[in-house]
Amino acid sequence: MDLPPTLLAFPTFVLHKVGTGSRRALAGRLSEEVGLSLWEFAVLAALADFGAAAQREVGDRLGLDPSDMVRLMDGLIAAGLAVRDRDPADRRRYRISLTPDGQEALTRARALVAEVERETLAPLTAEERELLHELVTKVFTR
Amino acid sequence: MDLPPTLLAFPTFVLHKVGTGSRRALAGRLSEEVGLSLWEFAVLAALADFGAAAQREVGDRLGLDPSDMVRLMDGLIAAGLAVRDRDPADRRRYRISLTPDGQEALTRARALVAEVERETLAPLTAEERELLHELVTKVFTR
DNA sequence: CCAAATAGTTGGTGATAACCAATTATTGGT
DNA sequence: ACCAATAATTGGTTATCACCAACTATTTGG
Image (cartoon, rainbow over all chains, first blue to last red; front, side, top):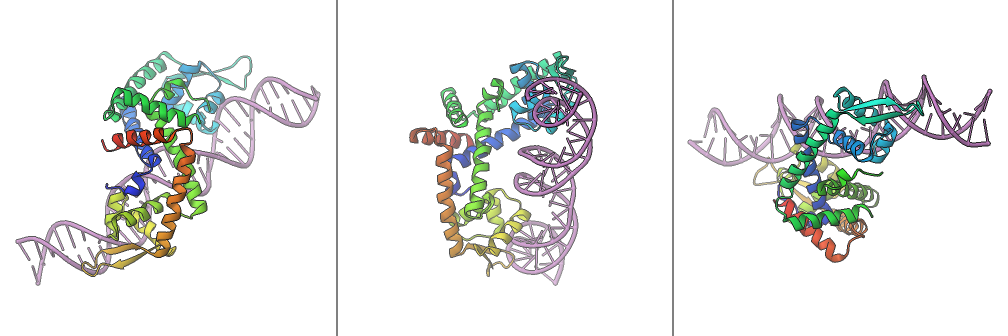
């Protein structure tokens, strides 16, 4: 694959290529080695970071449609990684929380993500990785 | 959308978010303002950068399946942006080349991409944009 | 109390990506 | 001359993404 200089001259083009490449690699290994999809990992991370929450709330935070959230949670619950309890104070809502298995899966996933990321960013020094992180974060939180 | 710190702590996660975000923005404006898809833009760029070539060759360079390449070229030819001539030296191959209209569309597309990119990377200084470009290029050409 | 809003669920849609197999026309190697 | 390889084409598949409408159950504001 020998891409045209015209495209490679655009930072965002290369950025997107790197982004999708690393996402693909990560999705594959996360699925194989921990049995999680990227979205499932994101939900577990949200539950760990923000604590138990309504299904809607987690979806909103991740930018996920409520209908997609239902199906995602179905999977996590079937896998025993999360539980869905009705919020007694408002019985429309659930209180989604991590099970011990979910905590453990998240821990393993986190380590794997870090590992795959180290591999992806191997061409960079530690300072460069940090710098890259800062730059994209600055763009992202525009 | 309030993403979990666990995810934001991964450079590649933020990178991917920025990549897809800018791609979405670019695809929309390129379609509206120049009438090109991103793949069509890529093909025009390849033709301009590498000169007339066989359909297969352009597809290989861009990492595009031959069957998808056929359908993409059908569109460009119908729009009058490229022409498909049989290579007289090997009549299995085409010689794909840009028409004047194709050249002109590419010029406008290039300018638009640069403009959208400036908007996307607005939070960065010129030096930071250059640095970001270098860093992602280093990762990409692992 | 009643209407409107909210949480969750179900069952979709349309776009795109990234393939793959089979076929036809043509060429190159031996 | 013949066979294998190549270029292009056709007609698919599978997965994911990012939605949307309609519905039920429940709560809240006026």
